[in-house]
Length: 513
Image (cartoon, rainbow, N blue to C red; front, side, top):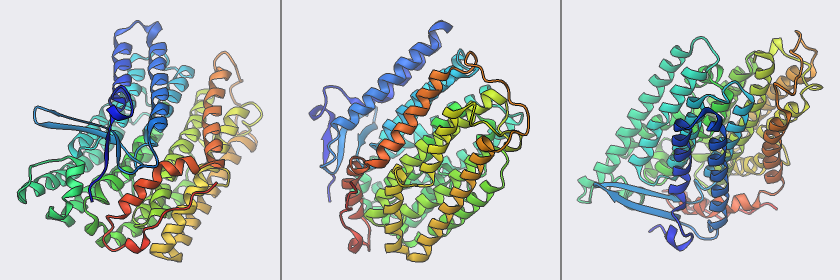
């Protein structure tokens, strides 16, 4: 079945997706060349423009029509450049743009507000993520993922908070480079597999998808791609780098980095399900097993943490297990739930990270035993943490509620009640460690004297902008998820047609008003 392609010229008057990638890159160049006084105004202008462009993207995206929208296709010196959006990636681009802007606003509160390299790296990171999410060429996607290492390393080395930053970078590079090497090998096998069968060598996603039956070595390709992406998600047991990076990095970079983690889940849906569906089906029990272990491993280790950043890192590992099970449930319900839950988790975990970062700016600590009694003096931060935590627990009134409902429904249909109950138990544990952390941070009596609250050193307005934006998005989308599900719906149904044995599961998902 051929995928419908709608080129950008029929929907807009300029190539929107390339513009979304170029705007932060141009802002980065301006930041590197300008005087210190203009660094943040230029960065904020670029980030705000990208938010507006991403909202325009949602406006012109036709959620009723399946296929690729706003496509751009160029061949430069034999190298293919193809970008486009569909239900799989259209929500991740606005999420990246919004978190990029909030990260810059957060930077205005911190000691990095005049740090040229720091601000430039945040803008570069935003461009890289948007480029990766929009890429419809396997090698193009891989190249963006490789580039992502540059801002991660620079931000951790130049602005991290721990003493073991070099050791952290060494661990991150070991994991990421091994994952990148495996995914590169998988992509090369895909492209050369087409050439072996008499077709032109191509890494174009549409060509690979239309001729996937002609690709040999399907199982080997699956193993290489899955393990490469598992490092990025990060799925147990490929996760050891994340708690280290969360502990020693900065809250501003970590917040946008959370969107980068979703590249792993996105890559499963984009490059594994449609391209090697047979192998995905053969390995489903292995993936579900890893997901179940990850859910409980992450949750139990989160309960044992005294450092809030490490606690949130293990929470992400726990949630990744749930999302991986959803993707490998092979039906529309679970796939829609996984995509929407990835977006909701990205926004909610960023909210908690911003609140922990703001607390760190006041107290110079992220350790729970040293904190407490912060609710009265820091109500805005407390409410930001609480709303974000409730969203992470998929409470009613948050976007995660409908998403988790769909994911559980799809899991029951494919894997049975026991797996679904295990996911729900993991969510109960998540509620436990997040509410316990909230109680220790904001309600319990302080263990030590907190630095006095000062509106000079801690601009209240900027904090409220961050809190209102994240809480407003979470609550607003939570009470009305129908438009967001419509964005995803057609693509989930289209992917469902590639499942080798699961046509009986293919159905349209009822939208929740």
